[in-house]
Length: 449
Image 1 (spheres, rainbow, N blue to C red):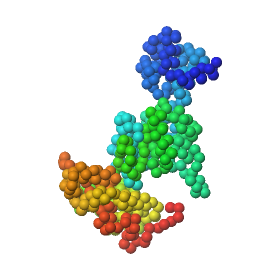
Image 2: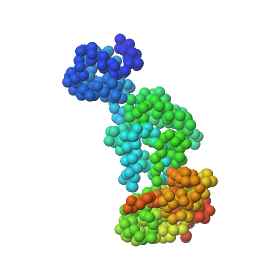
Image 3: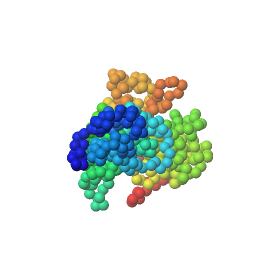
Image 4: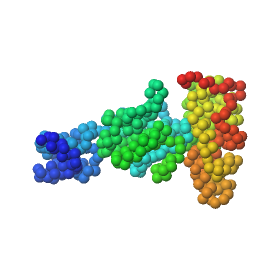
């Protein structure tokens, strides 16, 4: 008998079963609420299927109040779905907790959180150059949503490689398999959908880790699991313009290094570089001259976190004032760490500039020679149809090759080409073919570091 009811429940809707059970015993929603201690509004939402995942405790209180038989109780629980017995947030492995405070990204975290919770966005492309801080912002959003209980979050990491270096194979290495590992279900699409179908949940993925099959699986998940939200990390502008793009830009830096701004420490890029440098050079937090040098290095390196981390590594050998002399020449030198472990930022800048269409590349070259400019000034400088100039400026800005200088006193915002890009275009150099600082040997290449 139980098996018959369970089979029938696979096609039954929870709300219909609850309403029929209430009417069979002649109760109103208010009477059921008084007996079960569940609110009238909650009962109404359950009957209208407005609640995706009823709690097991709620179902038990309602079943007791309705004096359901064992078979009817099993039917109601089966209709509630496979996770009715336990909130999804209690089953999901928590995302990795941030190891330290986030610096200068509070606005990005708040905006992304609002997009996911309030604005109905289900797939958001988080775009920015390597090392700009996309992963840090995404993990901060995921951790905040998960720890607050507002939305469970799964941070999908790379699938990993077998010891022999061959490409990972098998269902557990696919996107669906990695999500299934966090959910504790089988690594097949239907099982993952069954878990997610009635729940709000955030999944974060890095586009570099996905192949075409993974991309297709992600689209199917979004189609079949209406509560799913995805933060999709990428270094490239996605071709599907229908998905919102959230660009992560460099940290704020002083307008210049001419000494006109004595309050250097208030800028997030300066605070970030000081936090990276203080272990190797403790005076960064107390000496005003050192703080000024740190601020100017931050300016030359455009406030890009990975470039700032790389510059901090050179403090093993040099003081900030000596590094500033190098940054004022070819700043790309300091953007590569002393221990040469990751050149993805420099490679990306080279590749991105080389791949620009002719018109966009010409626009970038013209803007390099301009002082900080407003959009109107840039349109005049580029000449030609205003629409074409605006498209080129927007693309350069979205890619991150152009940074914003915050406006003051209600003035329109101004923009400037990145210093790293300016040097490369002015000298015709390939950024990855950088030279070490004067008197410093080539960066060490230590195996395993």
